[in-house]
Image (cartoon, rainbow, N blue to C red):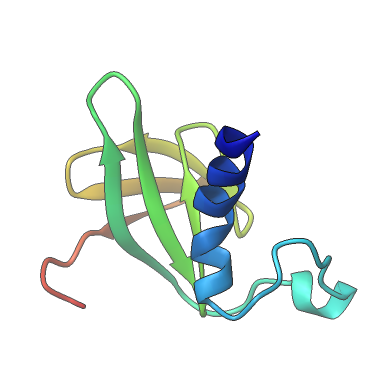
Length: 99
């Protein structure tokens, strides 16, 4: 039972630190993401690499094949995330020391 409590705390802590209740579903208007995309981190290793993308004030962990703000994540390297939306493509570069 203690293990379950620790897991819930570990999973909910980042959300609680942002002042949000992890068990409260946001209103429909709060679900829409707005703002520019910004790459704030790369996680994992070469076999399974993910990226932390910030959209406005919210961060999201994405992997190749995921969709973020209508962009398809095609590739993640050590310092970039490549996105595609139809024929339009772009790359987000990781800025070291931005925080």
